[in-house]
Image 1: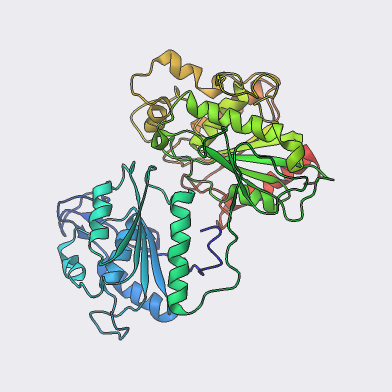
Image 2: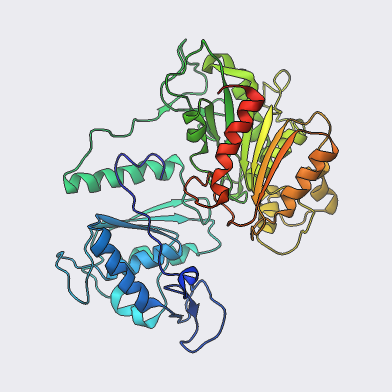
Length: 483
């Protein structure tokens, strides 16, 4: 949601769930009497959603107590719930027992139609679905099939469908960001509340041009290779930044299982800029862009070399350039730090005289090993996405398992994860931390007891995990001095 605050105020709500005493709205089972474990509920077979009545009452109370709201937004199961709220919407704004809600637009990401027969009448209310709607759909979505999301969009009278090549995420690339902003702007205009503090247009820098003598005030888009707009990196500068005092830079490799470069960790480059660094969000190669190894590695190395090469122009201290990697982005970051010359792209004109090794790395719940505990599971797809194929030898897995390549002289490491991460086991981080210890590499390792995979900056977390960015800033000041 970073950057959308100029157009919309978000109110985050917690639907009834197991943690609050029962399964709440989403406990999908084949029949009402079934004892089967909860299911996502996507597909053609009829399902029964236990707790729906309670959730319906809850939704009405949220609108009555915290509203009025102009629109609703949902992701995945939340998008399915959003569509049911649309079915409960009164077209003329006059609440009735059957249509108790009132709002003007809906936004859904990775959504699907509820298959509970009790919900069928809600989808038949065509006048309720005659409202502006935006649907964000990933062509590589393996959780909710693309056709299921398209079927949901087809229920709306005039849906705006934005498709991207990534998977089951809230994509933030410019191909969806720009039309999403335009959609919100149009909703604000209809409401008569266009705000004067509209977001600034992002400047795009052509590959062959160099900035003038002053540091740019706003973010710039910098292609990694001359003559090609993508892949690129987005550079964010601290407020009031000048050349007179070079500052550190932090490149950000977001997560996404090597199916997208814009998974968890969104907003980290902007966060770095807000704390006195030049933040750089890197678009690296993934399955969605059909850029598996060695292209994905080459993009990451090129980004590091390019920032170091242009350090003087951007007011960056070339000896204080770090990489922050989340999940699969953590694998790429640690691959770059452990093996900075693993592959050199023939067209990388900077490779001969500019190092691709970062001065330090920050790893958040990283994928580290392609070998340890390799078995059918969530991170198997990351390995196959990285190589772009399934037939991967054990020798190749070992070559790209970063815990096996930590050596003395490796840059300092800040590393954290949670012990109950169900997607990338904490074993990965433990292996890397132990490898750093054996090689006498300065490392801070924080193992938090609880927390789901993909929390990113976790700034809103009330648990212990929410402190990790504060600890990181303290650690960066110890390594780099005042930011």
